[in-house]
Amino acid sequence: MKDAVLIGIDAGTSVIKSVAFSADGTQLAAAAIPNSYVTLPDGGAEQDMARTWTDAAKTLKQLTEVIPNLAQRLVAISVTGQGDGIWMIDKAGTPVAPAWLWLDARAIREVDEFTATGDYASHYNRTGTGVNVCQMSVQLTWMRRHRPEVLEKATHCFHCKDWIYFNLTGDRVTDPSEGNFTFGNYATRQYHLDIMDSLGSGALKRLVTPMVDGTRENGVLTAEAAAQTGLKAGTPICLGYVDVLCTGLGGGLYDPTGQSGCTIVGSTGMHMRLQTDVSKVKLNSEKSGYTMVFPAPGMVAQIQSNMASTLNIDWLLDMGRGLLREHGIEKSRGDMLQGMDDKLLARAPAAVLYHPYISKAGERGPFMEPTARAMFNGLDTGTDYFGMMRGVFEGLGHAARDCYSAMGPIPAEVRITGGAARSKALRAILASILKARIRSVTREEAGAAGAAMIAAVQQKLYPDMTACAAQWVEPHLTAITEPEAQWVKTYDAAYDAFVEARKVMRPVWRGLAEARRMGTES
Image (cartoon, rainbow, N blue to C red; front, top):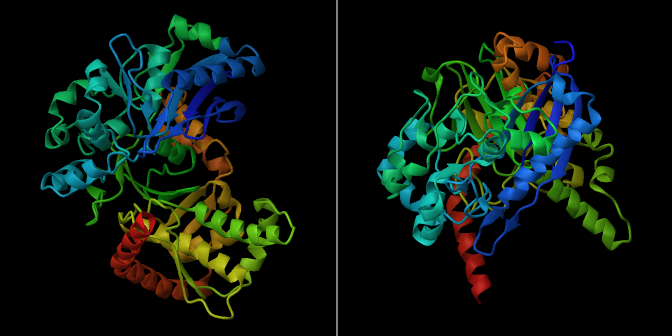
């Protein structure tokens, strides 16, 4: 099918986009609409469900306007989107409340209560996933306590991609990645709903939807959705896996040998390694991270996420910009980054030690501590701005090693994606701290590409994911960045200090949090 087209929908937190690809993985066109959500004084983060579907449909309609004869050429659509949260509908398919996002923090008490019980360890061992405030299980418990009238109306609970898939097909389902890391067992890929009993929410099991694997089965576009999108009724629709897995798939995580990892260097840092067999999964004593079934037979992805990645770089850039602004000089972040790589590489390695916990939400991987805060160690009168910035880059490398180490041996090769992956200084530092080969991925829309790859395999355009990845991913990998031999021993010593420091700082962080609380109340 020389003219065949596949579409990946990626409904993210910032942008909802639809991206069209040829059968060989070439990006043909993209349409995007900025996403919109509201934050609430009680820690809530909510999104209008009807608008989300309308925006997704608009992006598909926009593709029909730029790709000739798209409706006839379209082989399939696959959907991915932001993970966790709750998107609830009633019997008629109407939303019963705004969606709760992964950013929602209202269920803190429910997390604290559950993780202090004896049931938590067995749940973690089944799912391989640490319970946190963004997950449907604890959010439902909060709703049972505080919004029971909403739950009484609901018949099904979705995640973001499930809601869009429902509007495309009419099917009320979820995918194996979100289904299993929330309520299931990564080894069996089957639901294990004991956590709902442990949380006192056993009666809400009725809201949990069946799991379908988009690599093996598909729904079809309804007549109503076809009218809204300008596409043909009956077009195959695949339910993709959660966005982080699709981004990993499109960004180079898939490797049938299990020797590669994938790091997303974005606002947050996502570190993934592929386990070719469930027996190789290594869980950690902190009971943190995610274990997600992967869209390839028998494989699972282990994921650790440090809360803030490039946010640390932005913070120090903005500090410099603010100082310049005080003197009447306006500079953008892009201006500040001009020549930054060369300046950083001219500074000595490990001259300072930086812990990149700049987020007000603290840290979640590989340890969970909401009071954790960023810190510099080793500053002296010889430290300049670029020395501090190199320390920030190194701190991101140490955080990546901390996360990978919690999942087993560091992969021999790590593929990195995200805007900061373009930095040669960051690639060299990461390679030397991880002691791994580093390659970046030139593909811009890795999440949508990963979703479309699932449809390509399901529609038999490729015999398996290995063949698909060889065509869709490998040509987009850059040359290898090797570790700098003269830095490796230095960074090994600095990493040991990094881990020791973050372990002993916990009571200090908590003491500072209490002091801040008292200060706001005085």
